[in-house]
Amino acid sequence: MANGARRARIRAALLIFAAASAGCGPSAEIASLTPSEVMSVSAWLTASVTGAMSARAIATEPDGRAVRTPDLPLLGDGVTVALLGLAPDTDYQVVVEAVPASGEAVASKPMAFHTGSLPSGLPVLTAQNGGIDRGALTLLGVVNVGGASHAAMIADADGRVVWYHVTDRPVTDFQRQPDGTYTACEIGPVTPPAPERCDQFDREGRLLRIWTAPPESPATDTHELRILDGGDALLMGSQAHPADFSAVGGSASAQAMGQVVYRLGPGGEQRFRWSAFDHLAFDDVDPAVLLSQDPVDWTHADAVSQTADGNYLVTFRNLSQVVKIDAATGAILWRLGGRRSSFTFPDDPLVGPSFQHGARELPDGHILLFDNGNGRPTRQSRAVEYALDLQRMEARVAWQYAPAAPAWAADFGFAQRLPNGNTLVSLGSLARVEEVTPAGQVVWSVESPNAGLGIYRAIRIDTLY
Image (tube, rainbow, N blue to C red):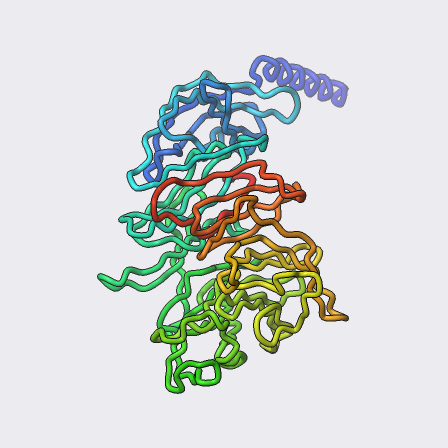
């Protein structure tokens, strides 16, 4: 009897709980929606959510275009999230959806929000969209030659700025790192003097830390910062050493500016060091480099990255050469292009790169780079992909693209292979970026009419979260 009574009481309690649950399904209510203190195109949202496993926020424009957050775990009975990727000077209707473990999500009442204006100094962007997703996001590092302000910014497919960091220092490398943070490297002004540095921001645009080269390098090289899985960082420093350029028509008592590659731990501890002065020769310099400079811009490294086998790839613009470095010993594994190239170029009529930027290893081992072409009689820039035959030591052209109308980007530039097989080509100092198909068809482009503007790099990302 006792067991039967206990079972009856349990069944009654379960029925009461089920009845109560049936009457109180998931719900959401926006508690506050306030502009971000960092960017006019983002906002902070706080909502109360009950009866759900997670929640998400959706901000919708009058034309139906929407910005969505990922599904977010609840903290107690609520959620706080930054709305990122909003357009400037735009009306939004914002809702929060309570997402239960099963069944349909339930939306809160909408709340109106209007974004602010962009700060002065951001360049005007004009986009031509031939059919890519309007939500595609492109990072742009902007150098405004002669201007008072520069920027690291993210634009959508229509060229609208949806994330920005404005500074009075030229921005070179701007990219999203594997941990979801952003880094922007800035060149220090001459007057008043200020050191070069690379800033690291969270996704909301708040400064987290500043990266610089070890003190032995008087200047941090601002061409690239790559944060690796685990928190280590690859970056470079610049040093000037006495040099003899007499073998290539220069002075026997010159100064050479070259780079040192560092791998630093999260606390700045040095894990790897590789100096161009220890491994390269002064007569490796490209013949088109001006040797009357003081100091001579000898190597001008503009990119460093880690390859799939754990070694390092460094792009030396003023050697017209890409070098692969053994991460354990520092030995040069091969050189692509320039003097003493390890490879021949049997099917490349241009016989290798000239003053290139931003070499990257692709998943199949090919090397993709932006070839500025400064050292050639006919100055035409291109993006080019080389397939490397490590047995024959041949570099064959697997793919290349040059704009139909001859275009020469004297400075900057980058090429990124996208997941859809297209390539994003940054025409550096021409302030133009194009997404092209494998057949060379331009399906999207963005450019700026601002005089003196350059885009150091453009990098496509799929989300701001």
